[in-house]
Length: 419
Image (cartoon, rainbow, N blue to C red):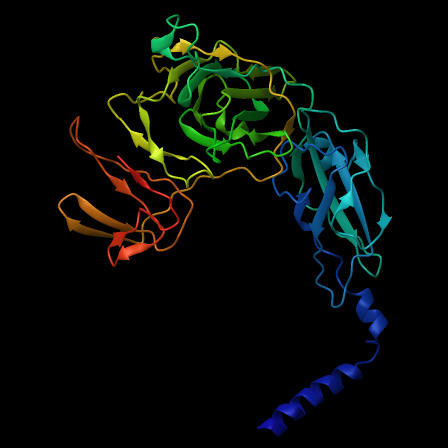
């Protein structure tokens, strides 16, 4: 059997070697051109929103089906519109054909990027036979706001202390609800880019805001900054807007140090018109500490204080994320001082997706063990049917105490027990 296989290979190789006219040079000349580059990254980010760098670095994956092929040159086009890029017009930067095998960290070298602007880029490559491939699909990126902030930081007041004690703090610490409704003009939306932050991630070492649009989760943040830098997140909300409709922005916030929330969104319409939505004293605020009760530290000692978020549904403002909610008993937000040293986040935005349990064990009446099959960074979503005044205990952990019981008072010192 081994001899037969050997003979077969020898015959195949021999027949290829003596086909008339099929030399190495001709085989190379007949090889297909490179394919479209894929995996485009800008500053190593697949979703580059709020780019701070004035000279970001571009990367891509070279795709060439030819054997032993290499990239010998590339061309990058950057434009301020998809139409220009579709016409192979790099009206912001056309690198021309650059003889290079570089496909990572290629330095942008075009016109100065304007703040709070939208750009698109694409790239093509050449192979060892000087054949040009097709351009990649375009990638959108947006530039950072820099000094173009027009929004005002806001927070909420403590209702029961309003005009009572001049020496007492007048703004909430802990949980805060913020909301604002705005219209979208009845015409096609080109892009809607939002910039959001809140202070401070200390000492909870976790999110300060969770942002929603018409009840849908947008994102949470910001990341912790260092060297006195404060970070903000940038989101593309274009697909979440409906022309001619009213919309509701809602933010659930938590902090015990500083109290400032900041939001700015520019809605660009296809006809060139635009609207600017900003945080200011027109937003409505509600002290959230009755609805979401800090039941103690889920963190560990002096390292951080992350609240165990007990929910009191009797005080929760159900529907507050939706258009048309009655916020007449809320208060106008308090305008606060500007936030210094603001830079766009250089990490990918938080995404939220459901994760179903791997198994559920009913241990007794209304007593369940829920196993997700692995450790995950998550929150708990429950649909509960009951009567006012009833309590639901939730205990979460990363380790089993026994086969169907979780260790919620963890050996690390963390405590995950909420009511």
